[in-house]
Length: 365
Image 1 (cartoon, rainbow, N blue to C red):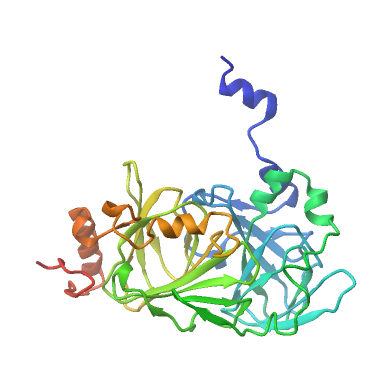
Image 2: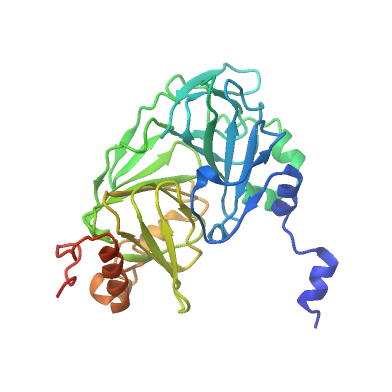
């Protein structure tokens, strides 16, 4: 029998994506969470211009990745295109992005703090910092790990001339910010002007009196959602596949994560601009122990139309249905008593009373 050590010695222990990352010359952060995305270490990033850092947290599992990118005052990023999908979330600054296909008309749209938008597959694009005195800082989520590991050919990934006309044809309203609300709290668009104040809809099945909206970004394989829940509450525990990049937009609290098959429970503290990624098949549960509603933004490869992770299977499993009935969610009455004890202790630290409500039916009994 050939040992794993022999395989590693013969072929190496790095994926094509990991090898490519090293050639970019910027830091790569790992682990379960990042305390504050806006303060991560960055280094000059010649390919994109400005500075950057990769965010490759454990739960991403090479489905999608994240990165931080800083554009200096009054400057622009380098022109680029690539054969992977990308979603961008602006965390600091304001400016504009120009997008075009080879030989086609250029489209320019503006953005600000809180904007989120998609970059169509293999289209040329460039970002401009509209401020002369402050840098722009944005987070990007991409399908680069899947594409790099599948093709293991960076020349193809960055220099292919193929144009995906079925995805993008320079439509006049592509980046207008207009959208359409579908059943199930799904908003379809390509540009969200302000995720901090975007209107959300009731999602009573997940508990805590929370509200939510799911995003479908046109023809991208990437999607996501925003959720918010009140002070002194927590959401029901649930489980799903890998790659959900969770960024806190407001609030103060923590999440608990533990393997479905049993094992150590990890506690991840969070605040505005924190990020974490629950690993595949890990239960996770979010707790608002602060003094304001907690709102968070999620990036994932679960587009309703084109998701890399089969969203039909995900929905059929019941993402907000009782796990005892084949779903993916633990109801409040079935959770470990230890979870309530931890939460009550956290509320006491903030001087908040124990809450009795429809969302926490047993708390205080």
